[in-house]
Image 1: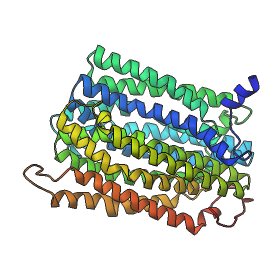
Image 2: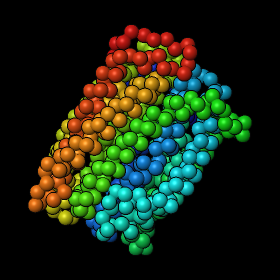
Image 3: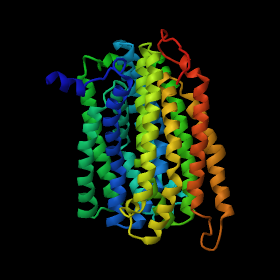
Image 4: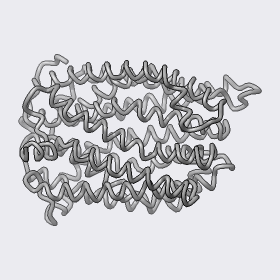
Length: 470
């Protein structure tokens, strides 16, 4: 029994056993953990919308693209570290593994301080840049400033949980998230409903809970001495490892930056349509976060699986695991589309009681539903390439679908649909263009995957290529 418990909470070797079993064993705790993480921001929105009002919900939604944009560097480091950890763990190179993790921890510490130093003084200017409605401006600035004060906790939680996943351990981050999600709900209700702190209370609840998650995960990583050694020597920056980490992570960071920047422009378009539209889009995108969760989870799972097996020179398992993961992801997406079609109105009603906002939200959910099938393809094939160390394709595809397609098309669509009812354009422009960009992204990702050049990007020299079969 003790051996099984240790195996559950320790690193998982995904280079042995049936690929589909290893993937599901890793994915299910990760999926539940992502669900818990999504609850952080969703609970903020539900409680703010219910106890403070639609304007509070709109204020929180206005800040999200800005927060995501400011945190892209942390995301880049986390992505690069996850790929390096998976490949060095698969190759059983403890020294390189430990030094890679040490370098990642130092980089994320410096980057978090940089985010705080830049973001906090500029919070008001960034909100004005996105045309935040005057009715919600003060609440949005308060929420954004407080969340940015918690950047250090956000940075360390994301990097350490990503490292643990790279080691094949998705159970411990899950349990940590479940614990701190409960803490977040309690603090949200206490601060917002009990102490009448408004959106500021929701922000404080979030950063306190994330900080607790970060501390718990750091302690866990430090104690995994049989797998990795965290000591002062390994915290000394190494030019080679730092360069590798940035080479692998920066394309993902640039991808996220491009996406976040496009969302800032789209948010500005939504803000110009009034806070009611922002309230609706905030509700829809919270639901979208849960709907997207299986796709992102399977993308992370296959990236870890591919990284470990390429590190172990097991390309046969990469091919089989990729096929298995695609089947699981597509099946899940079809089920989700059906559920959203049935329960969309009930989901929107959790955030607001305003009937017009609910009806608009239901329409937007139906528009986006078909896109989840496209995103299943994007995340699985993109995850395969990321796990192999080929992170550039996602950057170029994201740049094309957002900068060239989504943002210009959204503004054009809005301009062409102006009317007395919608002087700044129809809200449909926000979501039909997102659906179109998802579909184009899926096709582009699959075609790039079929080229097969990702097989040559491994950090482990001994990895050999194999015939393209998946």
